[in-house]
Length: 207
Image (cartoon, one colour):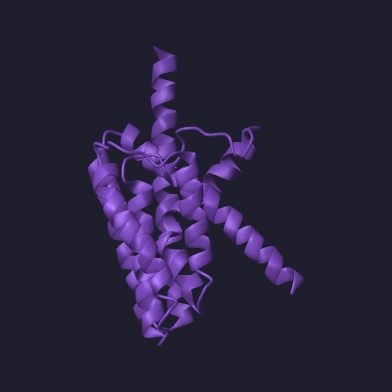
């Protein structure tokens, strides 16, 4: 019981921060959370539950009405309070019924891995792990010249693809393999972007 409570607190706090860090581009956090909520509802329904799907459906409906105003170019923004609220909602909804934790891990794998990378990177450089910067994957992609809508839609596609895999694939080992493959892919992209950034800084200093 104490370990379960500790893990739950860690999961909720981690998800709150992951969604807050994800909220860096127009429509990114809201859209990914909309996908997660819709998949939570579908997964609960497939498990034969009748009332639990209503909770994620309510969140999905609210985000569906909000997203057109938040997508690039945004006219309404989440802000920290909105991002914290979304993170808390996703964290708690993911533990309302069995097996949705794996769904959340796959739907939100990219921001979770990105946050873990940034925390380690900031600690290595002697900075506070919660200090904001433009080291997150979505910021690096934007700084490399990719337009915001393309980055956001790419995140949506990954969330849908791996979220459906989490819902439709029965084997836990296969889900774990998919999560590992996605983690390797995200880390490879982050490493490549980091090396490009270092090369640009070296070129500027040489001038």
